[in-house]
Image (cartoon, rainbow, N blue to C red; front, side, top):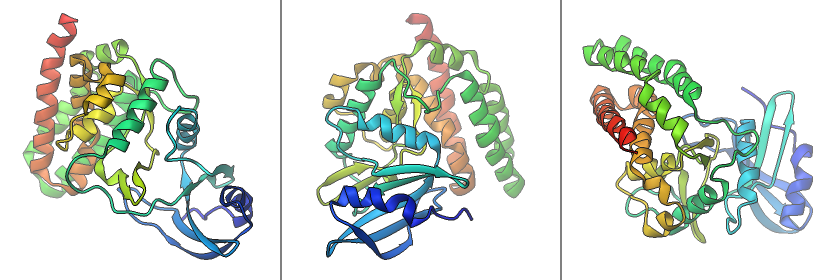
Length: 295
């Protein structure tokens, strides 16, 4: 397991953030998420007052995304305290937001506000260091991540429907409709994984955490991730980012979201859910062609 960065690497930044010298009171691993690991919750003593931070190993793209968020007017959270790199990789120091993940009901307005501001600010621009969703990225996602998970599920279950799903995915990896949509649609900075488990209901307001899968992509990627769980974007969001609900973008996002989460479904949710997600993606892809032609 990759060791955490030494305290000396981040403690001075934590002291500046806390406004006082800090010492470590307590620390423990912080779980959660599909690929959680290398994340610590650290309670600091700042001149007699406890403050809590999160120290995590991260991708360099997450650091780049946090820096890009920091320049968006009106977005105060999430906010990076410090970042660095050593021979083991990149690390991030963040405030700890204490609260449960969103489990039901409406997505809080704060989440839509952050997404709208980030999407509008970075529309048509690429933050340095954040990967771009294009035809090459799409093919790599399927061939390196989604297909292996579906093949593994077939090896475990022997269900022939998973063979059919894999054949469709292989064909979709070079689908001309997806390529055309990605050439046509405007891109922005997206969270890339804006599901309810990444929305924390902190006492002072909801926070969209874990930008480790941030991508430069059409804005509807984030909208569809939340809308897939019966939470359509409110008017306050669409007033700032209307193109995220335009038909081509909406249909592309339906394909993207259902394909990108197929690996998780194959590993954890069973064949029925995989088949349902493939069917949803296929219907959206069938509608994408005429929508592209009509544009």
